[in-house]
Every structure is written in structure tokens, then in C-alpha cells.
Image (cartoon, rainbow, N blue to C red; front, side, top):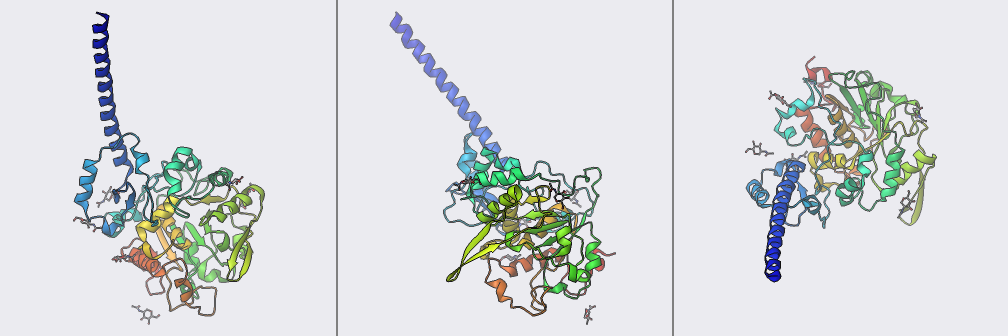
Length: 417
Ligand SMILES: *[C@@H]1O[C@H](CO)[C@@H](O)[C@H](O)[C@H]1NC(C)=O
Ligand SMILES: *[C@@H]1O[C@H](CO)[C@@H](O)[C@H](O)[C@H]1NC(C)=O
Ligand SMILES: *[C@@H]1O[C@H](CO)[C@@H](O)[C@H](O)[C@H]1NC(C)=O
Ligand SMILES: *[C@@H]1O[C@H](CO)[C@@H](O)[C@H](O)[C@H]1NC(C)=O
Ligand SMILES: *[C@@H]1O[C@H](CO)[C@@H](O)[C@H](O)[C@H]1NC(C)=O
Ligand SMILES: *[C@@H]1O[C@H](CO)[C@@H](O)[C@H](O)[C@H]1NC(C)=O
């Protein structure tokens, strides 16, 4: 009798275990799938290698049905997101994870904001993503987030091969100021924010655009932002200044005393150590590089006004977004600092005017050089400048930005005032 009872209870236990397993499977499949559908934005597909690929907008329509089929057939468990982490064998900078969104982002209520153009410009609609995370903060060094996002691309698109401890030290050292300053709150923010972004292009030489540039609410500047001697052409106001160690402009007296927010773009491991050294100990790291036969050593001191309360570090997801959505990126290694700065302005402002951008053989390479320098200088670099030029041109033609290109159209005729 005991034996029979034992036999039947065993059967019951087996049945219960099977039932529990079934319910568990059902739930994980449902939940896992819905998480993935939420996290992956449009334009991203999963391929057989379980890698996620950002498709440039012009390719998004291709094999749409095949993709839908794939999504329909996917049955993924709760750990599915972990499984989705790309295996990047041949590393292409736009092969990647979903873009991180900023949970604190608020959409501008400006009725004439450039983001309204997503309604009228198919080109922009395929490219503009609202609320991409722009700057690093402590959330990014949270172990789970870090593992899911940072190790799958090399700098500047991720922190693969980089020392997490160093990145964490950099982020912890930052006081992470509000982008528009502590006095600007949701209530006091201007309804429509007008920004100028000023590059170094020779088109500005003799342009007399200084007053027009300074009249914007915020002015972004980049790299060698010579102002003192060229104020009439380029202005002197600076709200944001974007740089990496080698491009930092120490020489300009205006910049040296400016309270501009410093936008730091780490392109390589040295840049992280460099910023950590500067913020925590005011130490200037030596960059040691091979220069042909020789070994070169560089020091890049910063101004004292670059400190923990004035620095923000660009988020690798934003850099990846700018690159993958706005450039035909296969021909370049990375976007220029200027390109990233204009893309930042598109995220932060409602009206954007762009000056000194677009390499143009009619002008010297930079406004602060007299001699015409060869454009081959740019061709041999990491950037594909024709691609960036096309982007300015298209943004301007679609009425999304005002691009000062040395032609007759002025900011006033552009905006119709
Ligand atoms: C995708 O297809 C839709 C509908 O056919 C079309 O309206 C849209 O312009 C296409 N998008 C791109 C980027 O080609
Ligand atoms: C444009 O898009 C916004 C949302 O971004 C929407 O509220 C508005 O109705 C759209 N306008 C037109 C004319 O479609
Ligand atoms: C990582 O960075 C920390 C702090 O900057 C340093 O102490 C440590 O030695 C580094 N680790 C490696 C493996 O380089
Ligand atoms: C950082 O620099 C700004 C601008 O020069 C200055 O106002 C601020 O007091 C500095 N903060 C610290 C902690 O040194
Ligand atoms: C990118 O390439 C496509 C196809 O070759 C082209 O139509 C488009 O104009 C290019 N975009 C830019 C910004 O150069
Ligand atoms: C544009 O400017 C050039 C040179 O200043 C001038 O010759 C030309 O007539 C202008 N074109 C228009 C359409 O105003």
C-alpha cells in the first residue's frame, strides 16, 4: 500500500513540476518579447548572429517583411536582452545596440522648433531621434547598464577595451551641471531656444557675422576657437565649448576666462586618463606617440576654468547616433568634433544656425589662416568631409538649420524676418 501511495504522489509531483515549468516558460516568452520590442527602436534588426544592426534610414524599408517575420517568430526568454548583445566580429561603427534615451528629457514646446520638421521632411524623420542621451552620468557606470551597453564598441562609440574604473572615476569627479545652467529650470527655460554653432571654416574670414552670432541665446564653439582677433567675423560669446585634449584651444584670452560649459569628447583611452588626471589632481598627462622614426611627446594643459563644475562628457550612444543616423559612415572612422557639436545643438535647441562649417575650396581651410591650405589635409584624416558637407547642405535645404555658406542668403532671409 505504501508503495502504491508513493508511486501516485510521485506522479503528482511530476505533473506539478511540469505545470510550473510551462507557466514559467509562457511568462518569460511574453515578457521577454515585449521588453525587446520596447527597447529596440525602429531601424534595428536582429540577425542570425544575434547581433543588432542599426540600419541607416535609406535602407530601413528593405526586407521589411523578412524582419517582421523574424520578430513574429522570435520566442525569447527573460534573459533575452542578454542574448541580444551583439557579437561584433567585423566591427562597423554603426553595428550596435539600441540608443540609450535620457529619462529626464523633456520635449520642447516651441511651436517653430526644428523638431517639427519631422512632420514635413521625410529625410529628417528618418534621422532625428528625440531624447537620445547626450552626456555621461552615474547611471552609465551602473554595472548592469555598463555590461549591456559599453563593452561592445570601441571609443568613441563605446568603452570596449577601456578601464571601467577610470571611466567611473571620471564620471564621479564631475558635478554634472545642468546643461543650460542651474538658474534655468523648466519654468524659466525660453520657449524657443536659438543657438549658433561656430566652426573654424575659412568661409567666416571677412564675413562680419560676429554680432549676428552673438545675438543667439547660446553659442557653441569648437576646437581652435580663435575669438580675440576675429571677433568681428566670429563673435565672442561662448556658452558651450567642445574639445578633446589635442584640440583644446588655450591661446584665446576670451575662452580662458569664459564660464562656458566644457563639452569633452573622449576619442581614445588616453583622453579618459587625461580628464581623470586633470579633474582629480590638476595633473597633465603626457601623450607619447610614434612620429615616423621618432617618438613624440605632447602635453595639453587646460585652462583653470575647466573644472569639475564646468565639464560634461559626451555619451558614446549620442556619438554613435550622430554617426549612424546622419552620415554615410562607412567612409569615415568617426565624425568630426564640429559635426558632433552641431548634432548636439539639434538636440538641445529649437533654432540652429551654423557658421564656419563645410569644407569649401573657395575659402582658406580655417578662418584664422591667411594662406590657403590644401584640402588634402582633411582627406587623409579620419573624417570624410564631403559626407559632412552633404549633411549641412541637406539640413539647410530641408529648412532645419540655417547654414552660413558664404552665399547670399542671410539668417534673416532664411527665417523670413
Ligand atoms: C519607406 O516606405 C514608406 C512607404 O512606402 C515611404 O513613405 C517612406 O518614404 C520610405 N522611407 C524611406 C526612408 O525610404
Ligand atoms: C507634428 O508633429 C507633432 C508631434 O511632434 C504633432 O503634435 C503635430 O500635430 C504634427 N503636426 C502636423 C501638421 O502634422
Ligand atoms: C584602471 O584604472 C584605475 C584607476 O584609474 C587604475 O588604478 C588601474 O590600475 C587601472 N587598471 C588597469 C588594468 O589598467
Ligand atoms: C570652476 O570654474 C568656474 C569658471 O571659471 C568657476 O566659476 C568655478 O568657481 C570653478 N569651480 C571650482 C570648484 O573651482
Ligand atoms: C548617403 O548616401 C545615399 C546613397 O548613396 C545618398 O542618397 C545620400 O545623399 C547620402 N547622404 C549624405 C548625407 O551624403
Ligand atoms: C550674390 O552676391 C554676389 C557677390 O556679392 C553678387 O554678384 C550676386 O549678384 C548676388 N546674387 C544674388 C541673387 O543676389
